[in-house]
Length: 530
Image (tube, rainbow, N blue to C red; front, side, top):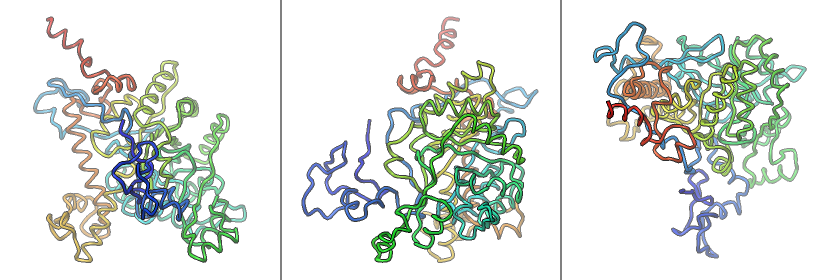
């Protein structure tokens, strides 16, 4: 098992001086008095708690890089030389009908009032982090054009500088939330939706009431956790006035901005930023049902749940309680996760890795189904970025898994497209881009497709980050169609666990997916003995 060094990583902008490093501590085997840096211990000596987080805040997303004993790369996809599952009714599979462009990649989720998506993918929760806020238009428009759901994450109202609260300390006006909803809806084409996530702080501020009364939002998501961390949402602020404002709104802000010692440190320039934290949630079965009932009475058509890389007990609670409460979708997010703001060592060392957590989720879902309970639709998250990951999730979680939740993978094309737009204006395109042309029409392969969707006038208003996300989604779709066609699955519901094989016996033990030398062996012997 290849363990990463705990004392140096690009995420914290640190490195070891020596090539020889103790594998457990990450400390150079020869640590010299007089070393000029820049390992994590060295840097933390004068920057302290800043080293807990990847940086610089607002400019990066970070994902854990710990190498686990088993992961999704230890699964391979089966291909077959005959057969065709999932073709339209009445269509017989043959070389003329079972073509990969005919594969239907649409999926849907929900208990009764379902939401259809063009692709079994939706975004991770894009909440109060600065990188989500400043890139939101690109993300939202791109998701809307692509026909997939976008999740607006926690604390968006609570950190809005222009937030107005009423006499009961509830949200009265939240311009940034309004902007986010309107950005998505302007280009929504009937596939996917915008859903809003809610944590402890959002509940106290009355976010649910605000978004349904003003915007008629149909789906709200309760949040228990995520794959990157086991504490509440966090951001950084570099203003004393802003830190005091957020503290006044009820957030945990550290170091305490009201403390004269910290105020002095900030004014002197040593303390450069404050952290805003959400409170820890505390789940309890009766309270969970009570909250779901309250939200339904407010008028929400769908209620979803996001849970993180907790252990088997909390996973069982999420699935069983959600079944009883008729939750529409559970997103199960495994470690290590990727985020705009999580403690780095927590991201590296906390929680159940994705494949272990998802294997248990399938086992538990099957268990309650055998007892006669309905299993909520499932989505899996935690390190996915490509079409093979989508296929593996649909197969591993079949028939319960309906989609993959992608975090950084759907943010990156938005940021790349945005930067291409900036570089074009500056006449400073890098060679990696300029080799394809100098205009947006030449550079973006899907530009004309988006233009056809929105019209020749509206295309001028579309941010290039959105076209970037549309282009990436198109790549995911075509790649998924090819993999599905190779496995003779012509719609997403026809993908099954038998379409996977484990490359190691340990993977087979964890997942329940047969070792490749045992997979289809009975069928092979039947052919040989015929």
